[in-house]
Image 1 (tube, rainbow, N blue to C red):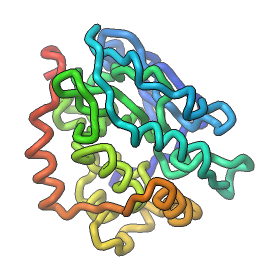
Image 2: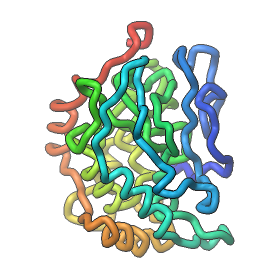
Image 3: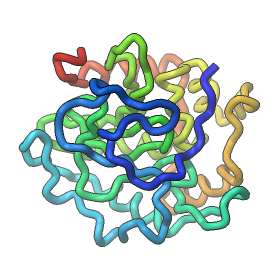
Length: 261
């Protein structure tokens, strides 16, 4: 049974330094290329304002990316305006960080873990063991139809990048809605333990049967409701069939370095 992994206490850490959380990366655990930090519980007062965040000038392998996704800017605005205080921490945390989604500041780029698809742009992480969220890039464009992939660098052996990735949503809006069901931190289970993931992120909204293993965060429901109201979104869940259809449709779009395939 996978163990629930709580947030890291460090700030943004370059991926090339190794795995976040329980373990260190070997010399081959990170792909060649520029490092890309994954946000990890950045304090609210250190986050950039929505006016400072920009998707202008994003490139992938030297090619400019046409970025048309206003909802991402809106999510950054929401992240600053919604906050919650956990019982074990004295300072308020921004809304999405509280729910397990640490949004990346600009400029965005590709994460360089061994399992990260080469046709992706990372926009955040969950703060545990390097699990990160990325847009799947198609035709040098990211927009409201771009799928979202979750990548788990600690998913080995065997060292199979296809197994270490799961399509979490058909688009960014659905990804945000998925986290409103039960937070974003446990989305790593879609890679590590699909049965548990489908139990937690079920479409009915009923509580999972294994709450002892995956307890909700303090006031998680209240914070999620505030985020949902701010963005005018409703929670989303998956049946096993729906999740399998999502993988069948979008997972073939993922590309990996030949040396990692």
